[in-house]
Length: 282
Image 1 (tube, rainbow, N blue to C red):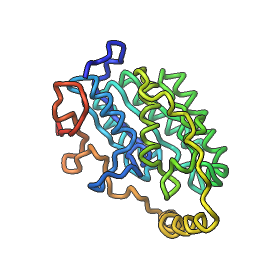
Image 2 (spheres, helix red, strand yellow):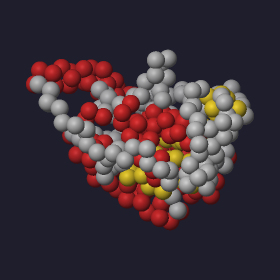
Image 3 (tube, helix red, strand yellow):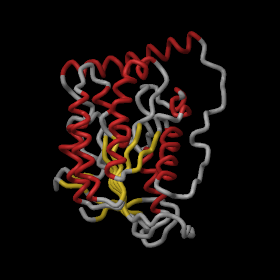
Image 4 (spheres, helix red, strand yellow):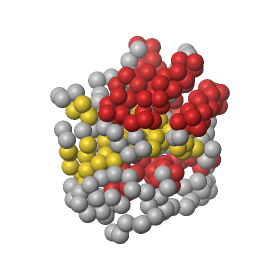
């Protein structure tokens, strides 16, 4: 594959955040998650020999945990690009101190921006439905902070919230919190274009083709499955102070060594389609 001379020359990417960046629910056959960050990294690697990538995101993390557990590790890697998406889990909590959330997000950006060539922030997408409407004021307060920080620190903002196509329930998994593989693919394209790469899909914002809505019985069955499999366990974790991310580390973080590591395409000298990754700098 020939590298487009007009493409950015990014040689490394570190992604931090929560389940959105970890890749849920873009499930692979081996039980691991791929997600938009992995898709983006593979496409960037196809343009740059020796490209390096690390994903430190962990499901369920609040912005304070992202700051405490991921920010310094990402900054120490000094990548060309860092993506940070966090704070949305905080806004979904019954009790949320938005002043604290804004302060922690500010701290994260102030520590990350000087450590990379390009910091990428996002206005996260929201699924159509009562949850979005209930928490919309908090989300929009969070996104206003994102915009202010981006302007102050020269970060790129990927505005997914303003794309109605990404609110389509068909792009969200049955848990109603995480994107389907097609949703993650669209996010990867959005970030790709925001970083200055030539568009490969000019229609990521385009709504999906209309399909007949599910019938009443199908909707009620889906509601029952959602409540039993996802909502009740989520409520249980909130009541007991637990998180789905307890005891987990990012996909590219060595628990034994206590530090992150890079991965790079197995054939890291030649740009082109990425078929496998290998660990480097453990």
